Image (cartoon, rainbow over all chains, first blue to last red; front, side, top):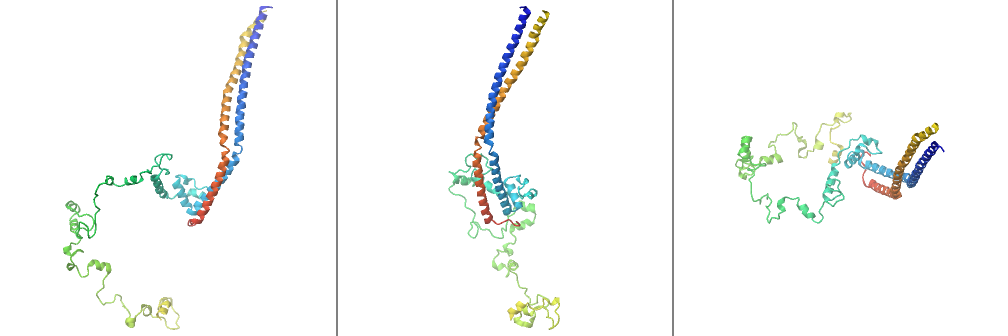
Length: 298
Length: 88
């Protein structure tokens, strides 16, 4: 056999060996891929199987929730009115009023009234009492803010510090009235503070009068002795009124003296009634006593 | 005889490298698919496990139905107790 033939056979043999190696390796890789795909298909099949009833169940849940939302929205609007309902929603969920109520498209155009302050007080109360308040500084899952074992001590800390030191004797509260330890004459103080020299200098000479009281007692102030007061003090007259001190009638015509001491405004006053048989005029409609008054008088 | 040698050279220098190159590419592609398939299988398996809680939706469905019924009962009571807003 010529050398060229041997080389040819060797070359073909090398090519065949290369083909065998790579093809077998490819077959092995493809088998691994097939096994992996089988696992994937099994997983996907499980997903499909498990999610099959989801659509029906979720649809039913949504239908029930829709009914609940319709019910609550309708009840809220019915009881609070559309405008206040929007305000309540805005107060509880800031910004939610922009979306409006689902079944009330007009609610989107309503400017929510600011009624959330009412709930702010309740929220603050909750914040003081426990952990339920949404504005609590710590995590809602943490311990309550209120000290349940020493709640009264916590409440006492709200008062001024002097009471926390438990002093033996606290200063007494000021006493007012006739038994007050310090008595002030009414002419000395009529409200406000008594102006000192600096205040008189700043405000002017009129403030000096205030330092002496509005009306000093020696000039007949309300705290003056009875012999210095007038028979009818001015204050009593202005409050209770006073007689004119004259017999002059208060009106131009005065009271009709015809009826004497038996005069009655329901029967003896007013213009003359129209003559018998004459057509009454509208201007005479108010003339004479009312029928009910005439009946009472008879 | 010269043609034999030329054929041998072509086989060894051209055909064999080309064959090896192409088969190597096929093998590399096949091997690169395998990790992806394994990740897909793992994801599908994990997804299937996550959906083990789907049957709880039936419980949720019943609870929602009961809750809405209670809300309706309370709403009806409130409707009787509270006055309607003015103008409604």
